[in-house]
Length: 581
Image (cartoon, rainbow, N blue to C red):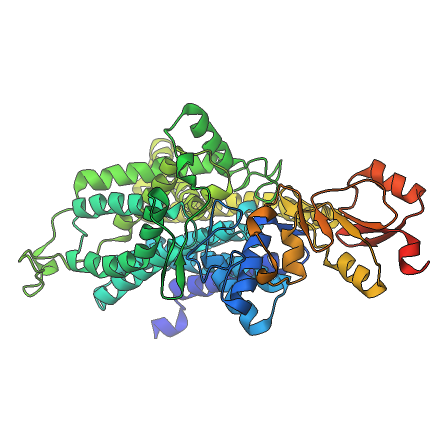
């Protein structure tokens, strides 16, 4: 009878939590998919490269170098991870090429970060905790999560897939049923992760080593489980290991079935060096504030918003303290109930079936963060190279927010001893402090997030500015030349050729030497000269980014050329080439 009269607080909390998560998910979808085709304007050079390789794979089964399904793309000579292009190739095969489909895996990858992040946070903070909502909130509004989801940058897939891997691993660690299957799933997730970004070749093994040491110490290690995880992980990693051997030795390029093990023109292993103070400071700035690349971060808007400049270091410190305390305690000795007589591994050693508590598993997120930043100390870090650290950073910020109300205990004990002695009053005050802290910090983040969104989706988007390392979509100008029958002997194009190859859907078999089409060099194809402007020539056309080469543009207009404007480029042609029209 009492239960019917007084609805449980837990039920109310669950309903509120579901409502908040629904609102956040709606905001997530709007911020990731609105204006996805048009903003950012143009194509990042690596986005266009992956897109053209994907289009070639979808139609011909080869990339632009005529290599059959390469497991590591050549791109401009120094390589590019293949997973993003493979996903796009599947979409292009089914629906044809479009810029929306090219960017769709990036947007869906951000949804994956959010969904897997909610699952993982629920597991580690507790299903009734509102800290899961706060972590989900950070993923929705923080600039890096928004900006990285809006263009087809292959390496950004590592962020979402790393969260999936961590979620699968912690799920396996906490499971008592279908344990081997869940460890196997974690191994598959880790193996797929390796195809998202080459930095994972070092970060993932480093994390596995650190987590192995930690799990052995807290007595949460399962030999059978790790074997089940290792098998699919090793099988998926093996082709990539062979690619490294091929590029470190004189072995030739080879194939496994339809897949090519790529031999690169330039192997980038030499970019890894010893840590220096300069690299450490660069990494700190790239993570907390941003870098000079406006497709990654914007001046005045830190990657995780201004409150995180304080909260992330606090959360990292709290995570380290928890890690050291757990290592010191060793997880405690299991009781008799946690040992099952038949649960023996092949060595005769008895395994512990008692699943570790969330408090024991939280340091795995700290270890992942440590693995990423430790490696980044060895390279010239940029914001996008740090992408696998950002979910862990959001989690650590939430850890800091969770720890702030703990300060209320000593304050109450010192200044309000009577209230502290009364258990009922103490509990009520703690809840109020907790909700008040969470509410105030959420409002602060919301204010900064709204300011960022207003600028990014307002002023910055409406400017139509092409960011550094972006090329224009000039296909409307080339279609106009074809439709109008402009018999230009030469077309001078200010952009490198990769955008033209993608948007006009050129067959890779028409390209004699793709290495001549590097994004920073002059190249010729058909009657088009790319990355070159030429002089004033009445028999030529000129296709430029708006505002580029203003003196030459004025000279062309003064010489009688006509300007035809398109969203991302301007076409200059002499009227006589179109019969005076």
